[in-house]
Image (cartoon, rainbow, N blue to C red):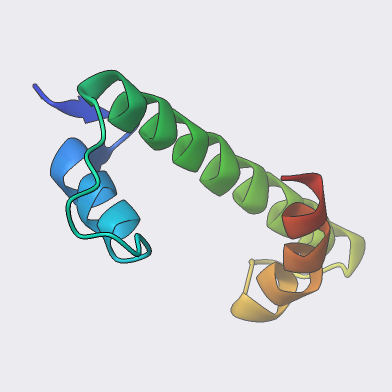
Length: 79
């Protein structure tokens, strides 16, 4: 898939970034978009792994949103 990195399209990453920019004229280079997409991939994978470990620690057969909610504060501090 051209223009993608880690499953996040450059267009999506750009749109997400521009939602938080104060100046509408702010531009982001293609390399920066790819870097942010890679960072998003790392964040999602880490959230998934930590949620799985949390579910295993609770002897649960599958991961639910509750496990994600438990590990999310840790993730936000790490990033």
